[in-house]
Length: 141
Image (cartoon, rainbow, N blue to C red; front, side, top):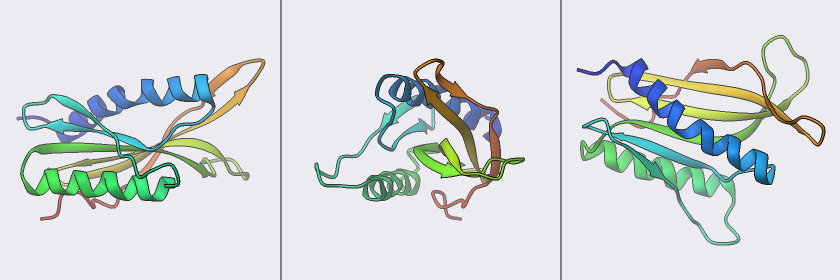
């Protein structure tokens, strides 16, 4: 039997390198995700809503896919990754952050945020992560 926090940490480890790569190479990334299948296999997830689509549409499409897979019992965890602006603890100004919504079928839901900055001199700098409770919107009981 798997531990929800451990499964979500595996998902986090699977998605962060791609987000960091996209930020380093392009300065931005489109929302994307990953799912953990019942056997522990991690599968990448993406959505395309056309050239005129915005991030919110992509996020909604990814969430709908996660929910559908959860209802069918195909997945036990999901990770939704997107770029946000937030105020990290101890700071007063908003800054860019990678947000990772992690949901697990065993009633575990958390959002982990990684504040970052990009400069020509130093490249991508990821700061200390912080977390908050998630909305638990993928796996309904």
